Structure formats: structure tokens, C-alpha cells
Image (cartoon, rainbow, N blue to C red; front, side, top):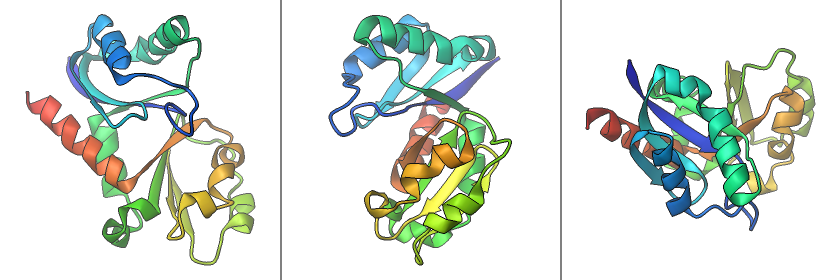
Length: 183
């Protein structure tokens, strides 16, 4: 059975690290037999169609391919379109839609077993809000994540690797994934 997937790479083309030309990224994904590959901005976001069997092995194969081609292997988070839509529907901060740069979703490799939310609460500024729902950590930071002490400690406090995207990017990936699914 074929499904639509969203692929998120961690720390690619951000702050001058992990340089990955999107043309090379698309080539790698197509070489792996994925259909309808589309990317969004330069930070390692892709949507495509794949079989369930392909998807299970995909994160390891992408990491290996990037390591061979570019010399680094970023964390790979793979979501089904249904996972992304569930994360959007579960957003505890719907008013953030008016300022999409203030809401970041951190998609985690797995649900945290022993998250230290108390440590994050101690770092939280008065106007920041956060929530953990399964494999998604929501951070509303109206002053921006660059000024948030909490943002830099998410993975360490949760004990799970992840990668963050702002609300605008999440909604755009949903739109692209729906287009790929309909094609």
C-alpha cells in the first residue's frame, strides 16, 4: 500500500552547517524509488509517496546515502501525512496562527519515555507556553526561539532526538503533502 510521507532532516542548511543542495537531496530520494518528490525551502523538508515497506527502511537508507555523498548523516524524522495532520489538529495554541513564526513543533523520533518537563518549566519565560503530545512538542515563543532558553534544551530534557519547524512551514508541508497524495 502506498502512502504520502513527510521527511524532516535535522540541522540541514541552518546557520551555515550541514550544507545540502536540494537538487542533490531530490536526486537521492528519487534514486531510492520514491514518487512525486517535492521539497520545501532549503532546510531538509521533503514530501513524497512510498510504499509502507519502503518507508520502514527509509530513514536508515537516507542517512547512509547522505553520509556517502556529503560526509554527514543528519537525524531523519519520517511522518505519514496522517501523523502531520494529527499534529496540526492537536495544536494547543490555535491563536498562534496569526503569528506563525511564534509557534514551533518539534517532531520527535519517538515518544519520550521519561521527559523532564519540570526542567523545561524552569527555563520557560513568562510568555512562553509548551505542551508535549506523543511524538510532538509544541512551543509557543512569541519573542522567538532564538531568545528562548527552553528551545535549546528540548531534546536533552525529553531524551529523544527531534527536529523543529515553525507553524508556517508545518502548514506548507501539509499543503504540499496533500498535493502529492492527490497526484
